[in-house]
Amino acid sequence: MGVLSIHLRTYAHATESREKVVKALMELLPEDLRSSVSPSIEVYEGYYGNPIEVITVDVNDPRLTTRILEYIVSRLSDMDRRRLLATLEDRVDRNGDLYLRFNKQEAFRGSIALEEGDDVVRVHVRFSGGRREALKYYGSILSK
Image 1 (tube, rainbow, N blue to C red):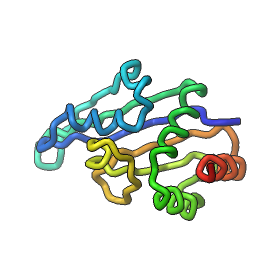
Image 2 (tube, rainbow, N blue to C red; image 1 turned 45 degrees about the vertical axis):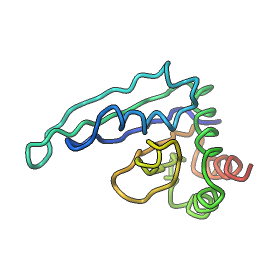
Image 3 (cartoon, helix red, strand yellow; image 1 turned 90 degrees about the vertical axis):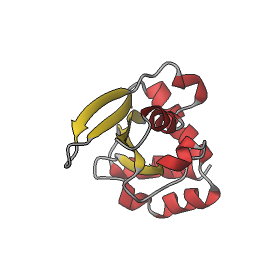
Image 4 (cartoon, rainbow, N blue to C red; image 1 turned 180 degrees about the vertical axis):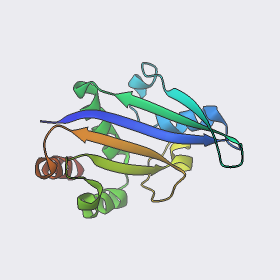
């Protein structure tokens, strides 16, 4: 049992620099993996005809996914770790998948901080066990 995949997703609006948004997304990956992962970019049209780019990175290698999750957690402040631990039940679905949101602006500056808004880098972690096993696993990583 463990982390099967990690899906990172964010948006670059017409008023944002794609390069800066990609940099923010890549900040959630360990430095040595950043050059070996290429984000995919899809362009959609917003309500007012403006372009919205959806930027994603998918990692499906269990050796890397666990490392990425541990990296993200290691970069969180003590306050964000406690907050995540306190809200873990709400962030894990019945399949054991974990959903996180990180501040995109802070990530661009090199810091990883939890965020509840919409202008975020979203992280979806797929776990191979059920909810109970996942909660125990995530809790152990957060308590290190």
